Amino acid sequence: MTASASAGQNDPLGSGAMTDLPIFLINLDGSDARLDAATEAMRSEGVAFVRHSAFDGRYKDLREVPEYSAEAARALMGRDLTGGEVGCYISHVEVAKRFLASTARFALVLEDDMKPLPGAFAISRALLADAQDDRTAWDVAHLAAGKLKIATPLYEIYAGSQMTMLHRAHYFPMRTTALLWSRGGAERFVRSAYPITCPVDIHLRRLMQQNDGGVALYPPCFSTTDAESEIVSGIGNKRGGDSRSPSYPLKRAARVIAENRRANTLKRRAKRALT
Image (cartoon, rainbow, N blue to C red; front, side, top):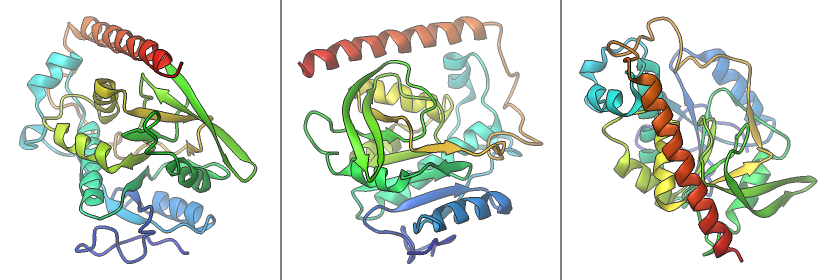
C-alpha cells in the first residue's frame, strides 16, 4: 500500500485509505514540509492515509467563530484561548465527523508532527483485537503519551518484536498527536464538542473522566518531531481577548485538583473491577 496525501471531498475515507482502519492526517494548507515528512514516514511503513486540511485559526477574530465561547473559556480556564488552540480543536472535530460519515469501526487520527516509532502501525492494529472486551472497552486510545500520570495497567500488546502495555488512562494524557478512536468514542466527542471552552486535550480528559473511557499505550508507539506546531503557534496567533485574568492561577489550580481527584476515584474503581 502507498501513502495518499489527499482524498476526494465526497468520499469520507478517500480512494487511497485503508478502509479497515482509516488514517487521517491533520495538516495546514501550505505546511508542505511537514506533510512531506509525514508522508515519507508512513510510506516507509506501507501505510495509506487521508490528509485533512486543518482549520487555521491563527489569524481569526475569535468573536467570529461561533463554535467558541470566550465567556465559558474564561470561566473554566481563567483565560482566553488562542486562535491556534481553537483551530486545533475544530480540526479534530471535523476529522471525527469524517470518520463517523464512513462505515469504519475505528479510525486513527494523526497530527502532522507525529513520528511513528518501530512497529507503531502494527501495534495500533493489534490493539483493536481486544478493543470490545467488556472489561477493557474504550472510547479513545492515546498512542503518543509522553508520560502517564494516573493509570491502571490492563494488558501487554505484542506486534512482532515490539511490546507495549495498554493502560486505563484515568488522567488522559496531554496533546493529541496520535489518537485511535472507536465509533462510540467519536460520537461522544462530537456530541460534546461545542461550545469550545478549553483546548482539545483538556476537553478529552474531562470527557473521558465521565465514563473512564480513555486508554493509553505506554511505552507509546508514536512520538513527535522537533518541529513546532504551526496550528497552535505562529505569527498572528493571538488570544481572543484579554488573555489571562487575575483568577487564572486559582482557576487552573482548582481544575487540576478536580481532575486529579476524579482520576484517583476512577483508579480505585478500576482496581476493584479488575480483582
